Image (cartoon, rainbow over all chains, first blue to last red; front, side, top):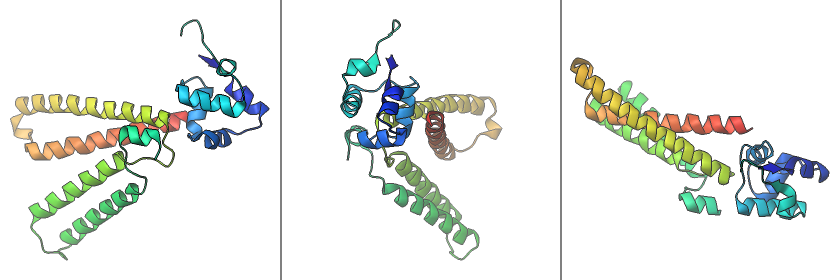
Length: 66
Length: 135
């Protein structure tokens, strides 16, 4: 699954730490999601979409092998 | 307490302080006994130190981090699985080696504590490694 988290974070001028604090997770979790090493749960994805004021489909996109 | 903490029934973070205090007390107890400042039977000292250490390690393993999220949850499960697999493999290997080399075998009680302590260390090392990899 691809995601635009890093881009959206840059647009909002948020550090990984600041974003992590906003949604109550660790900085490592944000880093892992951005590097596609971890796929977040629905709850976490919804929290991210709320922070970035975007639809989930604008943040996450399925790939052919998913 | 968040949902993750409720899911895994983890203890609050302050239990880490209790666990480290217990480790400190058991080390102090051991030192006092070795230096004969506390006149106690060797077996009793061994029993108390061993059990206190096991309780401390268990407390450390089931206490939540400051930030406990779904990734930590996943890592904990992976680390528990790794430690459990290690425990099973170690038990099988040591029972075979005890059968083949009976002269070198230890008492079963000592081996149980030894395996448990090693399992805890595998768990902590796995958790630490995963956290470092994600940084």
